[in-house]
Image (cartoon, rainbow, N blue to C red; front, top):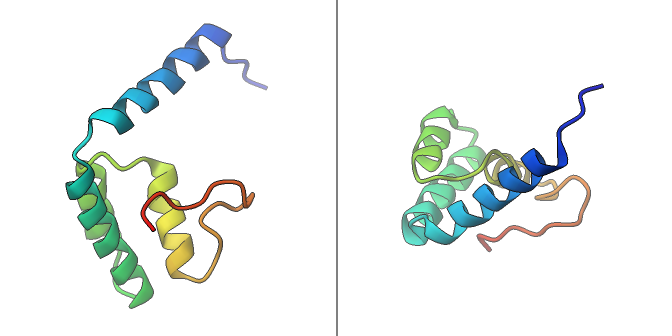
Length: 85
């Protein structure tokens, strides 16, 4: 089992919060929508994942979007809803 120091975990959480405040929301929303459309159409999603990553989407946002496109819940624990809807 790996133990992450509490201070390190807090710093990482703060960095993600700051990222979400400062990224270009319109660019991100467009990229995520293209990813959702590609996944729903059964297309290769890699180019769209790269685009969304360049727009500073998180891994959880990428995977949640693809899960929704395939008819699953955005969050497998059903706690978080898509911020892009």
